Length: 368
Image (tube, rainbow, N blue to C red):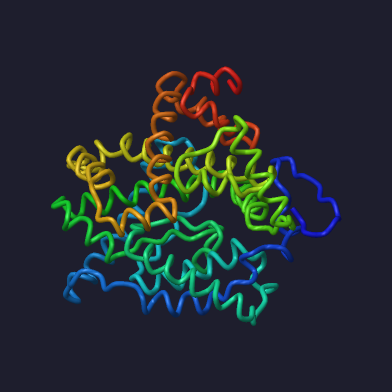
């Protein structure tokens, strides 16, 4: 929503076009350069490796990302016809730089339009963002970033990133076969690349909803308090934990946008996990032990500080996305097959609704 009285048209996806809201986006007033610089100083060093081990892991990850492409396309039926792109294999500092650039693009509109001197509030926002970047730099194994330009000469609209020290650190802690684990991780991240490259509308759909979520509502404190009270007294469904707290503070438009993003994220992550397990037995000899060890790690106990940080940034909500999303995809594919499941990628209208994620039969009845 805009802070002025000018009305905005709603796009077919149900979200306000991102470019129409650029002036009001919170992300446009964050000093992302400061965020990256401080984030790199705050980030922890990765596991110790010799130069030989690091170079060998880098080469194997780059190769695994290419080898994962064929099986993923075959299982998903989402062959996009594009040449197989090379992945960026990064250390933690490099990932922070890339993530800050991506967040600036995603949350601020066009990079050329962003305010080069966001002032004191921008520096404060940059310092806050630096802590998030530092924490995530040791937690992210890999990601497909649809908001950054792909490799030079590539037709891919985004870039696939793999964080080498984090992958090596996890494979060591889980005591799994390194080559198998690296390919297994690549299967998940390459699935995200195929999801977006085969369905280009997903990127704009995300941007439109992010624009709504990061825009100022223009409400007074009294209006905000009244809306929070109404929501607490009402029966409107809310997520648990930090996501539910966010929903209390959101305007009706932002509430709907967050629900759309949650459903999209749940679908994307669940679909990628489904593909990992569908492809794994033929491509990754030790996939069963990797899945068991990784799931145990995901849900295992953490120290109090980690639990607080994970709650604040919504990582536990993301874990729920993997679990709920995979159950949804597993059920639909088992009932109707992958070809009919792929109807889900047609448009915003075929995305699962909140009450359909846990009851896939409702989505099947509505869409198929």
